[in-house]
Amino acid sequence: MILLHDPRTRRRRLGVAAAAAGLLSALLTAGPAVATPDPGDAPAKPREVSKSAQAEARQAIAGGDIPAQDAIVHSANIEHLANVPKDALPGTNSDLAFQGKYAFAGNYDGFRVFDISNPKAPKTVAQVLCPGSQNDVSVSGDLLFLSTDSSRSDSSCNSTTQPATEKSSWEGMKVFDISDKRNPKYVAAVETACGSHTHTLVPERRNVYIYVSSYSPSAAYPDCQPPHDGISIIKVPRSAPEEAAVIDFPVLFPGEGPDGGGNPGAPTNPGVSKTTGCHDITVLPSKDLAAGACMGDGILFSIADPERPKVIDRVQDNVNFAFWHSATFNQKANKVVFTDELGGGGAPTCNAEIGPDRGADGIYDIVGKGDRRKLVFRSYFKIPRHQADTENCVAHNGSLIPVKGKDLMVQAWYQGGVSVWDFTDSSRPKEIAYFERGPLSTENLVTGGSWSAYYYNGYIYSNDMAKGFDVLKLDDRRTDPAQRVHLRELNVQTQPDYFD
Image 1 (tube, rainbow, N blue to C red):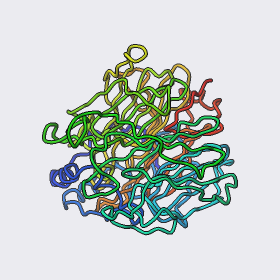
Image 2: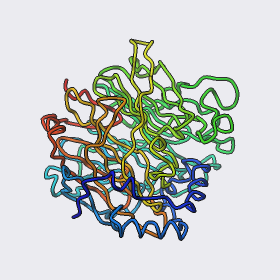
Image 3: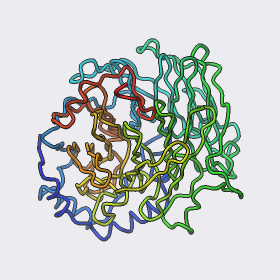
């Protein structure tokens, strides 16, 4: 185990190969969807980088600026407790959810259930084969929900890939009964327009509402027609989940024309994704609030009536944000952290060429009251460690670390690893801990790294796309109070009131 205590040295010393700029430019021009692994099939194929970039990666390893290939490094206040490699599901690992002593890990080939009662030795209790991108997962009571955002031959777990141009193709939400964690049962499927890239639960006593985020419509897709400027809302009766159905498609970006009223993207805003739906939504039910990361737009909306969400404010960043990816509220609901997934998660954006303000987090204060609340930009945060140009690295999924009076967050950065950072001062965020592996390759750009890193009941759990399920332990006086907070259930996109 190697410990690196001064990440600032790495930021100063690691350069950027000029030849890699052409590859990155091509990736960013292509847009986020191109960089994602082929839905439900195989990971994206490795892409060879320039000889100079290969040489620079090897030189950086030799000089100690980045970890050696597959080596693990971390700050002194983090301990790596466990790693569970992929097993029966060889696909790309994706999102995580938690309930009691169980963790549920999405994978492009299905999902896996872990018993985490002993975080030092997680045990697999079930692996469910059910292919489909991204298989983002969430749980509520006896129900598990799985997103399918790839065109399939039907809604079954035996489906095969099929072109989205065929009317018979299916994509959307799947529902499982997990009352027996060792034997999940598939009970329902709901087709949604443009599939379900991600989803967010708004749970109530009798029903679970699901906000389904999807994007990139095409006139050639019978079930994904433009304009696609809203979200699908599914209502799932807990007592009869087989009756789950879409109840509405509220328009979040009203406007005239075939593309609705979202960010027009290029050429009006070069380098910015055109808004054709949302990528991810986070709800804060205790405050009746939601924040949407919607490609070219960030939005704040009220969910006082979960069947009729109402947009309160909308912001754009046409200078440094390419793709609004996800959102996280602080506990007081007076801040939102939005992430920019520059390059779609498949590009090397943690380098000097890109800089500290792109592919980063944007911190916004929420000012005002009621429907007059506004999102006000304060600053950017990005990990202070440069990565090799063979490593995909950009801001990705994270969660709050519940400490009263502080705004602390743990976050995944793909091959940039896991970062713990403090944004109590919105204008001066700072990293306080980190964990990462060395590059998967020094010759090819191979997608991998932490997809999701979440804090749950005293530990950090990370789902590494390639390396499997990791458990980390923080030992830091700034985060230690969080160990007193215990939840019965956690879906990060449905943020709890940690102190209620």
